[in-house]
Amino acid sequence: MWKPAGRSERSSSLSDLSGLEPRFTAMNIHVDTPLLTPVQMGALSLPNRIVMAPLTRMRADNPDHAPTELHARYYAQRASAGLIIGECTAISPEGFGWADTPGLWSDEQVRGWRLVTDAVHAAGGRIIAQLWHTGAMSHPDFFDGALPVSASNVDLEQISVTPSGRVPTVAPRPMSVHEIHDTVRAYGRAAKNAMEAGFDGVQLQANYLYLIAQFLSSGTNKRTDAYGGSIENRSRFLFEALDSILDEVAEDQVGIKFGPMHLAGPLAATEETLPTAEYVIRGLNDYSLSHLLLMGTNTDVDGSPIEHLAGDNMFRHFRRLYQGLLVANVDMDAQRANRLIAGDLVDLVAFGRPYIANPDLAERLALGAPLNEIDWPTVYASGARGYVDYAPLAPAGI
Image 1: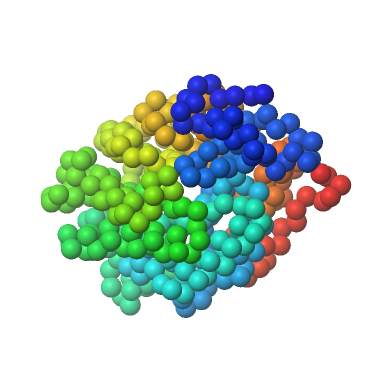
Image 2: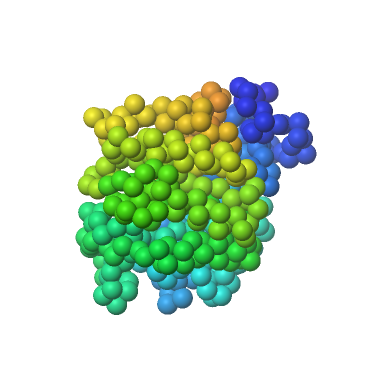
């Protein structure tokens, strides 16, 4: 049987999971394929190493920003993944900044998410919540004309998705220290709400365009107080948010999505981008988190300070630094995923877009079956069409 090359202390020990059989066994599939082997992720025993990445789908089109029975059907359909990471979920009204997305700050939202987690568990799956504050990616349209907040008043030069459509972002309002402390506490409250809603854990969204990344980047953080300037100061908000979450949730039920990135405008990579990411990831080793989800490069990094991290080099570089379980994401297919796991560059692989049109993606990857095509006009839309109506594999194909 295939085994990971080393790192037995953090990858699964298959002898420890002898009673956990991959759900594909009945289909006469070669279960020694790396993606299909079980793994222990913190408190969770996963039957395979296929992760459903968080996907914003804009189906919470109700005044409460709460999940509904439609969300429950959608996630339950995808329960054969080793782990589902729920869509980006706002921690507070102030952190809300993408139209028709759900939150985790109210009782109504907790009840809505309970529909989802119950459905996933009934289907045999596992699901964690991703905690999100959009910061400067939000827009005055969400706040009756008031400015969104961020580390500093730097326009991200991106596009905000508002109830009236896609509009350019604006220069946000710098957060006061009091507001930073309130937001840190909001992460903890949202984490507590997630567990009350029945999630199997939480993931801190600390990557890409959003608030924590806005604090980390020297291009968007121009503060001169304890939250700006040095790498240590710019990282302070991330670790305070993480500590707030850990006040409510056990370490082995908490993960983080993080990594260096290169985008246009103020979020373009600088000479400090990689040292900042290395500082944070070394700091994460002080915790016993369930996982680090590391995004590969999703833009052209040629000529940038992180061009040497293109392709598999992102995972190769940080595998040497991070002592916990590593999940890879961005531009993954079965062949690459199996190669990364077999080469001990990562422990699990997250698939995003393929899960939109393929609720049974895990089975399709196991069988080498073709994938459904995405109906792109329905990706960011409303209703069941293009959300819960993609056809699974026909019985004859299994």
